[in-house]
Amino acid sequence: MDIESKKFLGQPKNFVSIFNALLFDGQPVLKPEYLKDENSELVMNVSSKHVDIIKRYEDGTYLDLFVIESQSYVDQSMVARVMEYESVARMRYIRQNFKKHVPMHTRLPMILTVVLYVGESKWNAAKRLSELEIIHPGFEDMFNEFKLNLIELNTNHKYNTGEKATQDFFDLLRMIYRKQILKEDLDREFNRDALYFAYVVTKNKELLSIYQKSEKGDVRVCRALDEMFEESTNKGIQMGIKQGIEQGIEQGIEQGIERGVKNTQIKIAIKMLVRNNQTLEEISEIVGLDLDALRELKRSI
Image 1 (cartoon, rainbow, N blue to C red):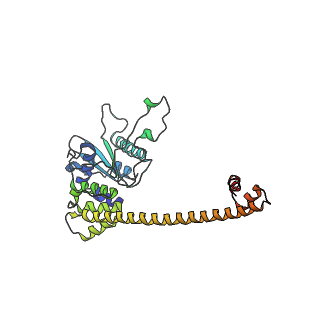
Image 2 (spheres, rainbow, N blue to C red; image 1 turned 30 degrees about the vertical axis):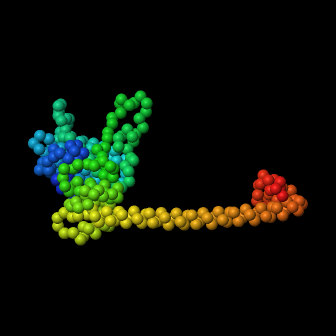
Image 3 (cartoon, helix red, strand yellow; image 1 turned 60 degrees about the horizontal axis):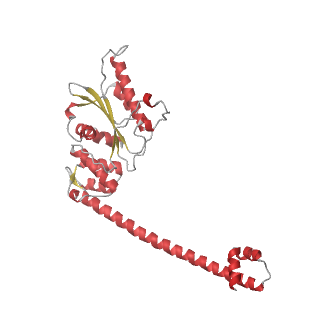
């Protein structure tokens, strides 16, 4: 997935749209024309820590590093990993640009990391450092908090990216994970690259089939997905009915056997009680009925 992630999310328009979605509700505050590939030693070092995509943003005022970490599974250590990425980047920048010490009033470039979680299961790992570390009573004021900038695509929250390709990718994942197509989306056309990246992430064969049948340009996807979801739902219902019938038959057989065993036990117990040559304890041990049941049976004879 890493290669396809870099190919899709690494496109300047797609890259800045992720940050615009998280920070500015899709407004084009960050511009793709100010985005540059960063090949410095600093970035190479941070990239060796498995960060997916790092870009330099330079608009004449700021020189910033923007990082996207594409994550397909829940990682409890993610908040600590991102902290490490950013710390390494800051220290590399200081060492490369200042010989002995950082001059007073110097401001370092901003480093901003977004974790794009594309997995299906709920993100139940730490989102803040305070959720990962033990903070002893009395030390709260000294603790330095750090939080993830996390985008979760399997929730009900709808992100606005302001860019068609990433918006299509976001929405496709939500549809697949929720198994629900809205009526207004049935004839919607999706970006072909977004369609393929959604397949890479979800391994949904229907998406691959649609992608392979399509050519250049946008692609209609939703009606095929809607049919697939309906078929899946019907299969689930039929399977539930079948399991219910099988379970009912099995329970009926078990109850019938149980009743048959009890009837046999009672018949044997009555014969032994009539003969009256054995104690209730002895009869209980032989036939398997408890003493209270035998006493009640004896009263009825």
